[in-house]
Image (cartoon, rainbow, N blue to C red; front, side, top):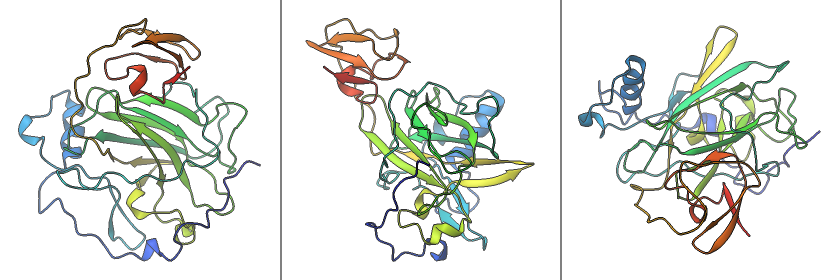
Length: 287
C-alpha cells in the first residue's frame, strides 16, 4: 500500500481540537463575502461593487460547537492560507476534471466548493487547483491518476470538486492535498482537513486553520473552503515573442517557444494571459 510517511518532524505539542474558540471576525449580523458571492451566483446576478470589501470566511465548528477559523478572513493585512508539505505522492500531468469519480468508485461522496481570493479580497479567475488524495482504503494511485485532477476557477473565482472522503492510514488523519496557483504567481501547496476526526489530535501536520466546513447531506458530505493567496492584484505582463499563444489548447508534452526559450507542457490546458510559460511552472517546464 502507498502511504505517506509518518510526519514526526513537525511540532506535535498542539492539541488542535482543544484549541480555544476564535472570535467571529465577521462582526454582528454582517454577511460574509462568500455568502454574497454564493447568493449572487445562485440567481445569476453580478456581485455589487459595494460588497467587494466584505471578508470571505470558510469556518467550521468542532464537536463541541465551537467556531474555528478554517482560513483567514479575506481582508487587507490578514495572513494568507498557510502552506503545508507536498508529501511523496504528488504527480504532474493530472487530467483536467472537476470530478474525481470514475465508474465503480467506492466511498462516501464528497463535494467541496469554495473560492480563491487575493490578499486584497479579490476573486482570482482561472486559478489552477490541482487535487490529489488517498482512496477509501487509504491508498494513493501512483501508477495512474485515480483521485487526481486539476481544474481552474471560473470568472468569479469559484471552484467545485466532486470526489469521495479519503480513507485513513497509519500516521495521518483524513486529508486532501492541493496546489493552488493564480496566473503567473507562485504555487501554494497545502492540505485540507476534516473536523471531528480523532486523529486530528495526533497527526503532527494537522492545523485547525486548514479545516473545511463539512456537513452531512443524506448519505454524502458537502464541504467548503476558501483559499487566500499571498498575492495582490495581478500585474499586467507584456507578451514575449515565440510560438506560445493565449487561447491555444495545449496538451501534455507539447513544446512552445517564449521569449527565446523552449518549454514543454506539463498539463493539458487552454493558455491565457498570465499563464505565460515563465510564470506557470506547474504548466510548463523550461528545456
